[in-house]
Image (cartoon, rainbow, N blue to C red):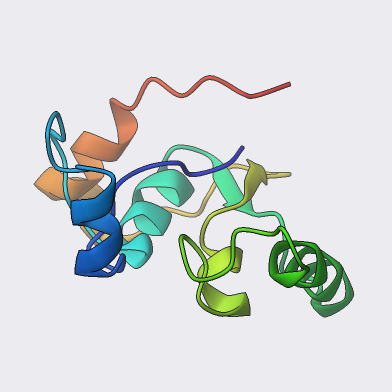
Length: 111
């Protein structure tokens, strides 16, 4: 799954150029989205350094999307997810509003 959301990590130039705040209902960082997705049963798909390296090469190649959405490999890591192999362990924030919000996400796989 690819996280294709407006995040606070995007530069103001990108946000303004594409008018990304127009219909945004949730605005948080990639890290915050990561927490929500982990609570919903997803995990980072590019944790393997070799896999992340290959994905980064493609993103930063000529014609890639570098400087618009991913400024470095870590930012790409926080945008690509897969279903977790086992349910996530309960975490303290799972009882918070943030955890409840994550459980209510209606996520649809891309493939």
